Image (cartoon, rainbow, N blue to C red; front, top):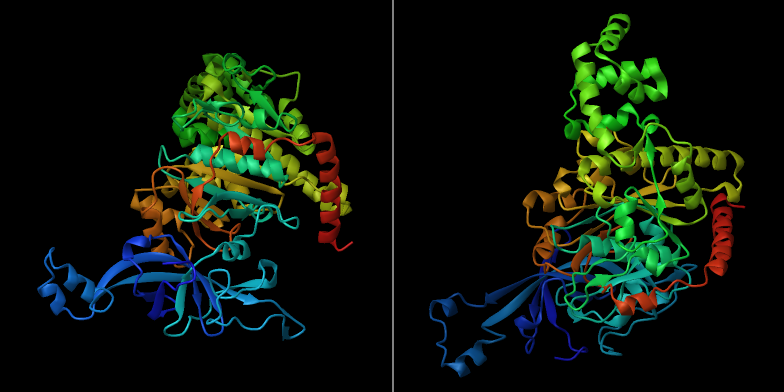
Length: 571
């Protein structure tokens, strides 16, 4: 079989259920795999689709009653292709049509009988237009293997000067880059999912490197397990460690640490220390930690009474109160003594966190915000402080204050309409996302607010999680793009496809993924769902993604941002 030969012939199907195509003589069913990309040449349109299932069929059921014996080679060859044949299930994803101008077609309709470069003739990628599938090809339309030009037409190419494309991987059976449109990626919140050990952190690091290299947004990364900022253990047996973002982009990435001793032991010499004061913790932050601290509703209600009385320093004042002072406070302010004493006892656990202080002379969160405004990407390492209590508290406190600052900046920009006041697009990366975004917490935490707001205030999320079923369904429906490695739990699989049309065929594709370096990508940043062999994060990648001259890049970024803002405002 050569690239110019059609693989199969469409025999039946529908727009809702997909198509069935009978394999042509000479095409072995064993050469076709689920997830393969195909092109269906109709009478008037060219369809780009995905192979979702492979089945065996017969023209006469009697053949199965008395099948050929193993030694009857000739009989098997006689039956192959006529009495027995293969059928593939196809899901058309896009229609490829030549662009039109002023009511006239730039290129003639593709002649299915004229072959060129291994397939039906096709104008250049820039001359084609992608349209949603609203119909199906006619009976007996021919199915071809997708070619490089087809992929460039659909997914673009990384060197395209007009778009911020980033190659995340390639199809399972072709060495052709599959690109994400990073401008569309950062427009909405996104998710990376997969069971433990499938390489979620490597996928996240790969994407973050692409965002930094293409300058699509500025990143704030809560690095729970110290995997993003500096070097981390490799999943490749041939390499012991892989480089972190600070090593790849020394001029653009700054590491902050909540555990300086742990960070220094790992060889990071220029990380900045980060502390949080009690007066920066709100009752809303404690509500997120209710399960970790075993706080009752009564304790949280009394925390509000304490905050109203003592202001921002209410936690420090509470921890210093004696039993008699608590009794007196309750008599004066109608508080519940048992609940306040329980709250006082449980909040003493916060003293065990290395980064907590009673008060701070320096505004560390303001320093992070200033770095983000200059286009510096920030990685916050937790070191030994990576337990859930520590991670959830720090991430929520820092994100809430940064979000407040972005709301103020956005309001100022909308009032002034000055492109220089436009906030930089911010992408916040969190791991163990279901802890922040479960149905209860999503309605209370700043992360749930950001996920629902989408890009209203120029802030989006990148959520990394192995249990998407535990994330609030409303939040899942707001995720623009989802990159999903292997999942086994049915509830997790259903959650990933929340709000996705035609998800049944995609579930079959997802179930067939390998446990390493394969992922299903679908959503806003790609024109159609696609299974990819993910791009290796290795020395070759380091060389391709190398940090350019930062001073020149920064100047270019300022000019680009100002120009784009003017265009959006119609100036």
